Image (cartoon, rainbow, N blue to C red):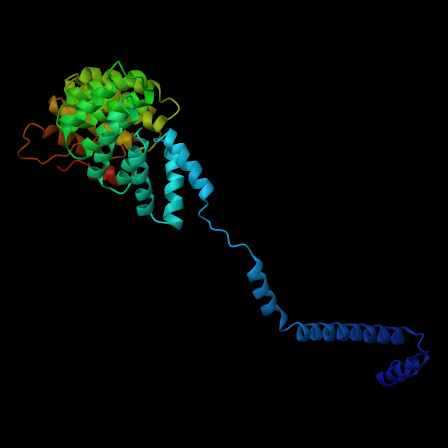
Length: 384
C-alpha cells in the first residue's frame, strides 16, 4: 500500500525507475526517444544547409545560360494580325490586338511607319484605312481624314470607309460635307448592312441638331426607328418631335414606348410623365392631367415622381385659374382627418387669397395623405 504523503510518493518513484516495467519508466523512455529523434533531425537539417550554402548561385547562373529568352513581341502573331487587316481593314478586334502589342513591346510610331511602307507598296487602300484609324485613335482627325480620303478612290464601295470620312468631317465641324457623305452611304447603289444605315442616320441626326434643323433630325430618327425599333430610339424620336412642335405625335410615340416598358416600371412612370408634358404643351390639359394621375396611381408609395406629377397638376390648374376647383375636389377626396400635409384651414386660406396674387406669395402644393416629413413637399408648401 502506497503512503499518501509526498515524500513516500517520491520514494516510490525512485524505486519504480529501477525496475523498468512500471508506467513511470515507460513514459520516461518514450520522452527520451522522442527528444533524441528531434535532435537527429535538427542536426541533419543544419548539416544540409551548410553543405549546400554555395550551390544556389552557381546553379542559377548555369540555368540562366541555358534558358531560352523569348521575345513577347511574337512576329508570327503580328504577321497574322496584319494579314487579317489586309483583308478586313475595319476589323476592330485585330487592330486593337495589334496596337496593344506595339504599345507594350514596340512603339505606335513604328507601327505607323510600317503601314506607311505598306501603303506605298499596296494598291487596295487597306493600309491607308489602317493609318487613318491609327491617326483617329491618336486624336488627329485631320491626318485621319487625309488617309481616309486617299483610300476612298481605291475602295469606292467601302461603306464603312464612307462612314469614317463622314464622322471625321462632322468632328471637324464641316456640316455640309459631312451630311453629303452620310447621304452617300444611304445611296441605293451601295450594298450596306442595316447597322451601317443606322450609323448613317445617327450621323445625319447629329449634324442636323448641330445646325438647329430639328425636323431633319426627327426625320432621320424616324428612318432609324424603322430599321431598329428600340425603346431608346423611340424616346429620342419623341423628344425631337416635341422640340419641333409636334406634341401630339410625340405623345403618341411616348405611348408606344410605354407599352414596351412593362418590365421596367420606373422607366415607364418617367415616360408617362414625358407624354403628359407633351400633351400639356400641346394645350390638351385634361389629357395631361389624366396621364399624370395615371402615373401617380402606378407609382409606389413615397416615390419622388408622384410628388413631381402632383405639382405639375397644380401648375396646370394654376394656369387655367381653376385652383379653387382643385381644392374643392381634393377636400372631397381626402377628408380633413387624412390631410397630414398641412391643416385644411391653411389650405382654404391659401385658396381664398388666390384672387390677389400680388399681395400673397404662393407656392401651392397638393396635400399628401400617406406620407409626411418629406423635404421636397415641405419646400413646396404654401406660404400665405
